[in-house]
Structure formats: structure tokens, C-alpha cells
Length: 352
Ligand code: 8ID
Ligand code: ZN
Image (cartoon, rainbow, N blue to C red; front, side):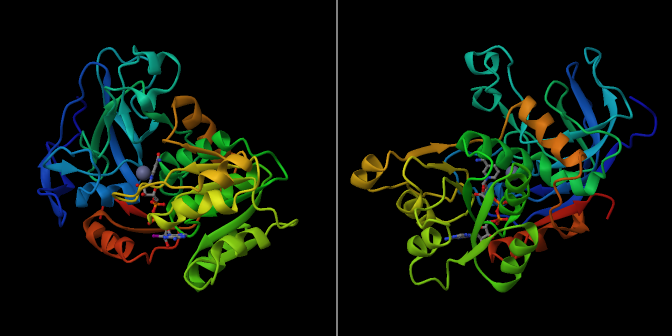
């Protein structure tokens, strides 16, 4: 290992499910033969990190756990098998920390479906620490001309919504409804949708999120808390009143997962991305059949999706609002997120 890597570092640690997170010093790990050690500079805070603290998914986390999976930084050490990424390169630690690269899914570039996938900030320690390990094959290659704070949310939110939009099959000129548009994934979804030539209906609540969505390029905003009839209002926001061609569900609530099939256009596609705890998907069989509705799940993205999502960002067409706060203040971000008070994304600075 290079000499300037400390033995100890600051991290936010979940000691027990339910939290709170504890800001403390822990040892810096050494990378294995196929791994890199990334000096994390910034890391976005995703709602998934809050699910990890709360332990509300049917998948247990490692404990104690360092959360975080939108970590952008600099490679400071690498294992002896690693050849295609160098010390000093900029890299991103994303949700998929590593996969077997051998199974049926990995061979077809569906790496997120690998049964042996390691998940950053969930089954292995993630990016809410100053030095984080990831498999070299899976770290995102971040071009040097890209700012590490602004790019960090792309590493989960950006990749995920870009993939979801592609999975929806929506074509330029068509309309997409983004449900949960005011949050982290939703704000990036609007920018990717706009870059892909789609028209956007944003669904969320509150004046701050409404203003943000208008600035991000949405044509209409439906406030789900004020609307008397979300289904009618979303359909009315499309030019011919027939509903959006695609729906991207990134809300952390069950109800919208039961409304989307009702307002989506005939032959439209509903893409489920948000993961509200214990929620069930439901849709009326009659309308779903006679409208030929397609409902599907979408889960992060593969290495190619990652590179493509980053390239959109590098070209300057993805500008999404974020606020920077010290890593030591992570619990405050979780508290705001729990209250639904965050418009856009918070990014933690690991030096503070
Ligand atoms: O690969 C995946 N499928 C993936 C990847 C990354 C994240 C899934 N996720 C999941 C997260 O675990 C989380 O469950 O996506 C969800 C959204 O993550 P986020 O964008 O990081 O969460 P946020 O910033 O808190 O935004 C959520 C927004 O949903 C709105 C809230 O107001 C907030 O702005 N919302 C809610 I709660 N109920 C709503 C409703 N009924 C709603 N918006 C519209 N209608
Ligand atoms: Zn995430």
C-alpha cells in the first residue's frame, strides 16, 4: 500500500438495525487481489441507505455496517490482479460492489441479478467512510474532468433511472410520468428523460418540489397530497387526455404502485423502481388486459448502463440539484429524508 494511506479513518457505522448511525474512527481495510481501495471524497445519500438503517426490507444487512453506495473518489491502492484501473484514477463505488461474472445473469450483462452480488452499504461496507473497497471490475470509471460532488448521485440514482427509462421503451416525443419526482431518483429521472427527448409529468408534493420540478423541465406537476383525483389529473396533463406512455415509479409509498396502471396510456409501460417496505403491487385485471398494460421492475443497471449514464453527465446534459453536508452530519440527512423534506439529493463530504 502507498504510504499516505492512514491506518484509521472516519466512518458512519450502523451498530444495530434501527440506528442511529455513529460517527467514529474505524480501521482502513486493504484491498484483495481483484479489488481497489477508493479514497471517497463525496457520497450521495440514497433512500436505500435509510432502508438499510431501518432494516425494513426482507433482506438482512451485515452488522455492524458502513452504509453508502454513491461514493465518488480516487483510487489509492489496488490488488495485484488489477490491471485496467490505476492509482490516481477517479472511480465510483456503486450499489453493485461485485458479482461472480460467471453465472447465467452475469454472462448476459444482467449483473445486478447475480445471486452472489455484493451490495455496497448493505452486504459489504459502503461509501460513508473515507476509504472504501470494491471489486475493480465493477467500480465506475469516472472521467477526470467531472466534479466528484455533483457526479456522486449518478452512481445509484442516475444509473437506476437511466436504466428504468430505457426499460420503459418510451421514445422521444412521448410522455413519461415520474412519481416521486421531487426526490433524489426523481430529480435525476427528469434530467435523463429530458435528455432523451421525453415530455415529463412530475408527481410529488409541496411548493419547493414543484418549483424544482418546473426548473428541471417538467411540463406539468401533480401534487398527490392536494389532488382530489391523481388518476384523472395525470391523464388530464397529457395532450390528448389518454395518459402517459410510461410511468417511472420512484416513490417510497405503496399507493402510487396501485394507481399507475390506471392512468398509464393503453399499451403503456409502468416501471417499478421505488422499494417501499412491505408494499404490494396491484392493478385492476380488466383494465390492464384491455389496455395491454405492461408492468415491470427495474433494478439499478449493469456496467454498460453505468458508463452510459456517466457519459450523459460528462456531456453536461444532466444537472440535478444537490446540497453538500459533512459526513459527520449524516443522521440529520436521514431525519429529513424520513420526513420527506429533501428536494433533490444530499451529498456528504467525507473530509468533514
Ligand atoms: O434499483 C432500484 N430499483 C433502486 C435504486 C435506488 C433506489 C431503488 N431505489 C429505491 C429506494 O430504496 C427508495 O425506495 O427508490 C426509492 C426512492 O429513492 P430516493 O429517490 O433516494 O428517495 P427520496 O429522495 O426520499 O424520494 C422519494 C420521493 O417520493 C415522494 C416523496 O415526496 C419524495 O420526494 N413520494 C412519496 I414518499 N409518496 C408519493 C406519492 N404517493 C411520492 N411521490 C408521489 N406520489
Ligand atoms: Zn441507491
